[in-house]
Image (cartoon, rainbow, N blue to C red; front, side):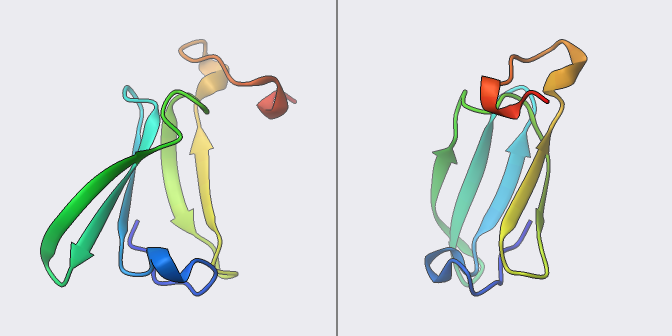
Length: 79
């Protein structure tokens, strides 16, 4: 997901990847077309990150597949 929202100005122009097996979100910081750095976010916090999307409200949303038996969701995500 390429973030171009206004809710998180510091993230504008960054790429985000959900990692199933890696159980994290990868943030790739760009300078134009050049990769400046990479950062792991929420590693081993929410389990397998399946999809990421920027909502029309500018917030970032993601889904997990932890209910399929291959991850352990934290108690706050069970319901």
